[in-house]
Amino acid sequence: MAAFQREIPVRFGHCDPATIVFYPRYFEMISALVEDWFEDGLEASAPGLMYHRGIVTPTVHFTVDFLSAAWFGDRLTFNLWVRKIGRTSCELYIEASHQGTIAMRVKQVLVFMMEKTRKATPIAPDIVHRMKRFMHETERKMPPRVPPKAVIRSLRNKSLSGALAKRAKKASKRPQGAAA
Image (cartoon, rainbow, N blue to C red; front, side, top):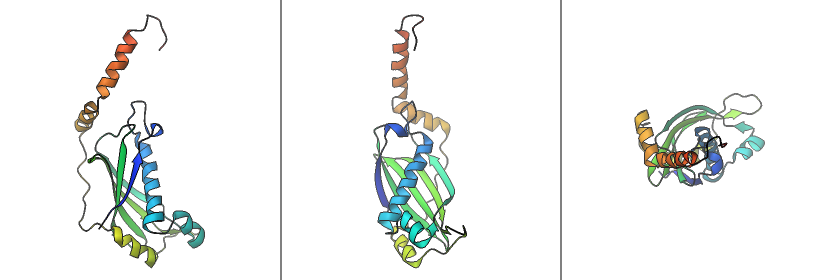
């Protein structure tokens, strides 16, 4: 089945001083993606579920692998599939990529709960029906963890060392005793 897809530009506010996406910002992007999926993919907005049905959908589990760096100015393509639909929860599989290179893979589990009681509640049949449009036909296993050397190599390939070299060269041209 087709994935739910959104393109999210990497903004300056998503990045750390090295202009690489600061990992907590990925969770904000994932949250926005899941809200968009509820609104546009499931035709059941998160606010609508909460205010009209009294249902909230907190995340109860995340497994995340960061496979390559994403940089300020990149446009990340997020794809979301449903891996499993249970009675009160669903498991999502999300990938974020830039120009075909996967930057991050996520397994996320959401539970449907009654807002007032905070007790799990069955997923409504109309939502289950719409979720099935995004089921992935084959089991997508999470990849093995990336060794740190591969991540470092990825950073070097994106000219981080070039940016640091420019800063070092600029700093060496400052007069002695000048403030940074």
